Length: 85
Image 1 (cartoon, rainbow, N blue to C red):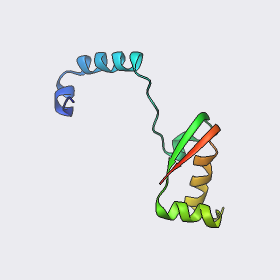
Image 2 (spheres, rainbow, N blue to C red):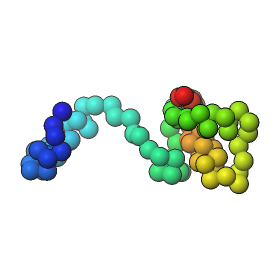
Image 3 (tube, rainbow, N blue to C red):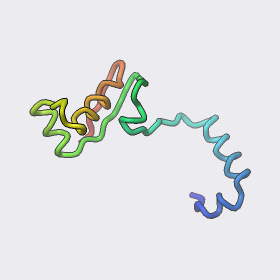
Image 4 (cartoon, rainbow, N blue to C red):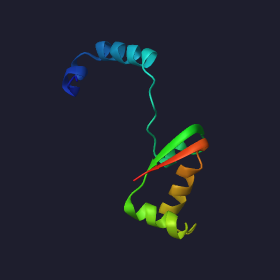
């Protein structure tokens, strides 16, 4: 792994490495539920806190912002949703 300070000294080199990585790696975007609004993917994984898991078990309350965020996160998938606890 290359230290951030090394990349800052050689921005063109860092950009070239990033361009190569983007061309050959299959990257998985990591987004917040706010960044994902309006987008969809075939499969979505959502990392749940114990409080999130409890909210799902007992039902989401649309008046609570964190419950609305869970709803958005879980409705971004076209086919599969994975809940990671």
